[in-house]
Length: 425
Image (cartoon, rainbow, N blue to C red; front, side, top):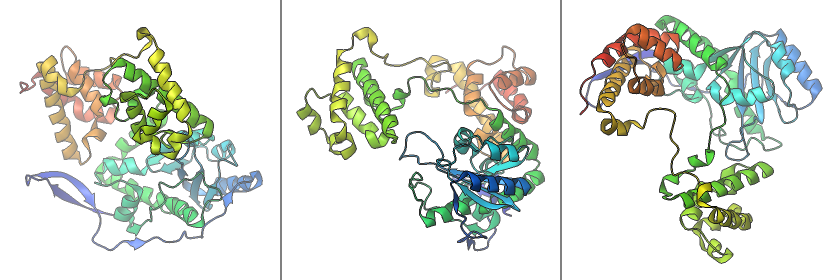
């Protein structure tokens, strides 16, 4: 396990005490202990794996590989599991899309994932839903590790080097190359050992209860609601200056999304965001004008150029009342850079509250965003309790989704900061 050391910032002042790797050379992890298992594609193979994992002992390491950037959506194209007594299993969820039998066999078993929020949705799609969780990435954050990717954590905590060259591969490829399967098997090879080492460190640092509460919060979080007006997240949309051009962005985005779903392709492989913005800011009227645009030189964009032109024409034909608004008011406070102008007292409260959170985060050796969610601090500072106290601030934070352990650390100092904020500069 790693030791600890105080880091020093650019001004020479001591910052959070964080774990660092022991001064030994990491050992490359090149092969799974039992070799690369075959990919399970048949129901009978899955039944045998279910029996083996049900008879195994201890936590189950779980990982999933998606095809982000290649396919539409975030479905899993390979699922890896490992458990003591059962070894490693590689499951093809395209051929075996129902893993509810495996889920039932593992009921009550702790599942170990790294960055669980990334994989839980695609695991739920195939019926694999953890009821007990240990997230090794989140544990690393709470412990103050400066780098919390799986490779960095395995190296710094266990002293092994993981090869991470295939993380961005197209995992919808069939058959999957042997070296990709080796990479996938190695991702769960040491995950339980990493969990055990981090569990020990959390216990020693007094943070185990915090971690358990965080893990439970991940499992209890409701599914994310679909984002309103997702087209507004088109990269570069800040360059679009009028409602008519925004209407073109919307029409193009929705057309692209429909084509991407039909072809099961990542939307960016159908038409890049930069092309949408170019078409909106320099809208073509004819096929010849369309073909002259730099963004149309891409093969994927050219394939559907007639549909892009029709989308532009539809947006041009919309009546004014049907055009999107230039901006949509949010349900929370304004962007912090506008606070000083709109409400200097609130700006002072935010500065004071952030200073409290930063100081406590440094004291406890973790990122400020893991001590308290930044959005909760912004909302609290914008609309604080009428009479700030540890109790009223705690109630407000609880209503904003802040966990109990976090409230116990920050409620009282935040109440003092909100009661007497420094004047905004």
